[in-house]
Length: 92
Image (tube, rainbow, N blue to C red):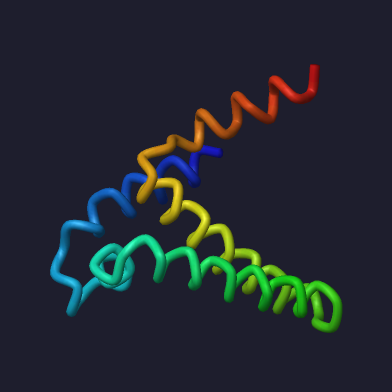
């Protein structure tokens, strides 16, 4: 969880950088719809990987998916803490 919070800080910082030097800034510049499509693309790649690939590739695709998930949360100004609270609420 600690690293996710650190990664979110990096995403927040990098979204304001020059898009020519920051992939995160490029995502934010291209907009929410582009980010949603990118997330869906990564989800598809993860699903295919989970079915057909080895553990190393699944981890690689999971990392891409998680990063793009965090970018979308930041786009919508939703904290990962809010998501975790909802998961805890569902556990009850």
